[in-house]
Every structure is written in C-alpha cells, then in structure tokens.
Length: 604
Ligand code: SAT
Ligand code: MN
Image (tube, rainbow, N blue to C red; front, side, top):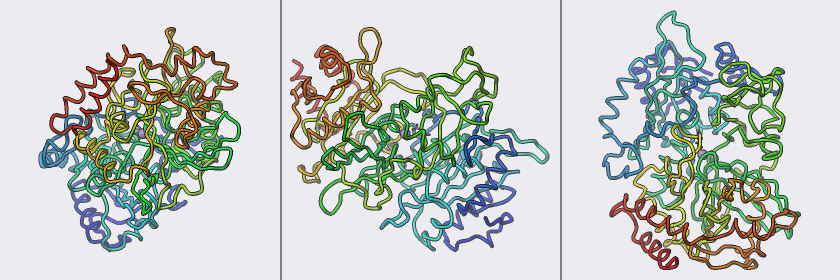
C-alpha cells in the first residue's frame, strides 16, 4: 500500500494520466484525510481486516481462517432499485424500466453530496479487472471508495490491485466507479460500525461508461464491479459491440459417456443460481462443475458458437437456505475461510450460522442485529438477504477452464423464475425468437435481494429487470438481432424452467436442488436429439416418460402436474404479457408481438 498525503498524488504507483486526473478531481471534491492505492496484497488484507475488527465493523471468526462477520446498519441490507438510475443523455434510452434523470442534473445533485463526503476518512483507489487480466481486451475499472469493507470484498469478487494497475499501463481505457458511504467524520467524532447515509444514489452514466454510487455499503450498491459495471454498463457496451452481458450462471455438465455441455442460466436474484451452478447430480454418472454463479459475458467465437465468461472472481451468495443438504459445495467453499459474511448470525464458538445451514439450529446465537437469539426467538437469526463472499477458487468443483479468457461454448441457455403456478418444470423454445420471447416475458415472485415487497409476481425480463443499462425494448431487439447475426445451427437452444411450482396444498411439486440434474439431463438429451417431448402451446415439454424420475418416489400424476400446461392459466397470462409489452411502444421488436400472436392462436 502506498499512502499519499492529499491532495498531492506525487507517489501514485501509476503514470496513467486519465486515472491520475480523475483521482485528483475526486480528492479535491471529497477531501479525504489520506489516499491509499490498493495493491491487493495479503499484508494489505490483514491490515484492513484488523482495522475493520478494531472499528467494530467486523467480528473475527474463531472457527474459520481469515474470515469475518459484518453486521450492517439494519437499513442497508439490499439493493435499492428505487434509488438506482440510468442517466443516459436521452431519457428514451433509459426506457420504461429504469429510473432516469438528466446526467447534468444528477451530477449537480451528487456533486453536492460528494463535496467533503470523505472528510475524516481514507480514500481507497482500487484498480480492478472484470474477467481475466490476460484477455485480449481486458475490461478494466477503478473504484474509488471510502469503505474498507468494500476494499476487502472487492478483493474477493474481482481481480484487483497492482496486477490490474500495471496491465492498465499509461493509457488503457477503464470504467471510473466512484463510491462513498456518505458519512464524513468531524474532528473527534466517533465512527459507527456501519457508516452509510439515508440518502442513496446508485447511478450509471452509460455514454460515459461511468458509475457514481452514494450512501450505501451493501454489495450490489457498493461493489461497483458487480451489477453496476458487469451488467448495467457492460450491457450497453455489449449492445454497441455485438455481444451479451447477462445475469447468468455458467456450468459444465458431463454425461456418463464423458460428453461435455456448457449451460448458462438466468434467474432473478435469490432464486437459486448459486445452488444450480454447484449442483451435485443425484443421477448416477452425471457431473456438474462450476464456472460462474451470477454473471456471464457472451461473445461469438471464430467457430460461430457463443462463448461465455464469468467476469467475477468470487461468490456473493445468499446465505439462508445454503446448507450441507442443499448446496454442499458452497459449504465446502465457505469452510476454507477467506470469507466475509454479512448479516448472518454468530455462534458462541465464533462461527457463522443461518437458517437452513443445518437442520437443528444451535441453542444460542447472536443474531444479525447483535441480539441474543434462541430457537424460540420470533425472528430469523439472519437477514433473508444475508450473504457469504468467498473466493470462487475455493469451490471444490470449479471447472479448470473457469478463467480461460476465451470462455466456454454454450449449448443451452435456461431462463427461470419463481412461480407458484402456470410455468411447467421445463419447456424448450421452438427456436431462438421463441426463446427471446420466453426471456422477455420471464416473471418471478420478488425476493429479499432488493428492498420492497417480497412474493409479488413481476415481469423480470431475462432476470435483468434491475440490471439492463438501457431501454429494455432495445435490449430485446439486441437479443433478436444477435440470433439473426448467427448461424442458427450453432446458437444455444433456449429453455424455460420453474423449480418453484406448487400443488393445491401449497407444497412444491418438484424437489429441486440436486434433483434438478434430471432436468439438465433432459435438456442435454434434447440437444442430442434423444429425448421425447410433447409440443404444447408454450413450447416443447418432456413427456412423462422422458423425464428421468427413477428413485424419486413421485407418482405419475405428480410428474404430470409439474409438467402440465394448463391453457386457462396461460390465457390469464396473455393480458399481462400484452400490458407488459405495451410499455415499450415502438421499441418493442415486432417479433415479440408475432410470438404473442402465435401463443394466442395456439391457446385458442
Ligand atoms: O446485487 S447483489 O449482487 O448484491 C445480489 C443480487 O441481488 O444478486
Ligand atoms: Mn445476482
């Protein structure tokens, strides 16, 4: 770490002119007490985590090496979608699904918030790279932050520090990502364990490829390489350059004959992406390996196939519901330590616990708000959006090619949401445009990953609703155009899955978790032309006999119920889709209306 007295940047470890100018400008605006250039070293990690323990932000976990528990301010626990803005020059480019403000107006508002906002604090400059630094065109960013928690978490989630800065050279482009907790300290003022502000802004300036964030320390609001860069800004780059930046896991599936398929899958936040990415198949001979659990960047390779790359370097998974029976590989990754846990409970022997980790809760815990907790307590011990932040390299089933800058060729894309009714366990699209229609109309019941009501059905196109950095109508069109530009025989096949359908008594119709390997098996057998399907109004659904349910103990009726396409349920869906599409006016590609007409006529 190099410490530099403000405002001079004489000892900065770079001569990158644009970077130096930007840092100098932000120093002058935010007036931190000191500037630290983050190098990403172990010594730095130790120093910062010691400091966080001293400040009361972190509790050191006695039971896991180099691991810490952070308890946030109870108001700062999730992404704030109503405070998230796409400040494109033209309002129409933000579209009907994003908040918008004129860039100059937003900059004026935020400049006043940023003025003096780092007083009494340290400014950290974090050079980072999303995806491998060895890539042909490495995707650099630099985050400025006044949060040690952000520095420590970014070290897990991205490739950061000296190696990124050196690769940036003197003039490589980078995404400037400005972050402040918005909690300056007056001389002598005591700090709180989780500084933040009640005023929050999470802002993307798409034309400038720039991010400004203020007031929150929570992951998706503050680790700016993640949703802000790798989805909102990258989706704009992808539109302009002819690739795809998507909210998708990437997994490698090997069948008993040793044949490999790579699958990408989009689900809204907190719908099981991490679990699917690390699935342990229950069917003999099948193997899953992990490449990514949240974000995929996909580009066409020279052979005409679509290749996916995980730009991240860590896992930022939902803790509750992650356990030895639901996701043993995540548990094994976590157990190796080097992790930051946020808003979970602390055990009396210095470990973490959350709902769903073990069947029996410990007799006593300290809950995420620091209160005594017993199994008789009224509230859960951990916040429903509490998180583990763990290096992906600790995943025991990490595929060796996870950091190949070329990416891996994708055979199938899955879309999925959380729906109690209507959507069958799995449906194969007839073709690319039908698959785009499935993505564009994806719906899910809301979760705790964002503030707001939980359990309400909303359209979440491509599981990207909060992450599309431009007009969603244009984004659908980009998907249509992507299909047109490609050799149709080489495009991935598209599927729609729903693990969350319920029976009349409210019970899940499908056991989920490791048993989802049976659905993956059918998907792969469809690609290879060996599995049977029935053509329904909504696409190809497995015949009851085509889905391998051996040993599951499900009755034929139960399998039928999980796979059923009920025309009356779908007829009720049509006006909702129409209303959804109407939002986009001229921006909606006509192919989407055509697909809706096909659906209507098939339901008639
Ligand atoms: O936004 S986060 O990346 O912090 C978590 C999520 O919502 O997927
Ligand atoms: Mn996510």
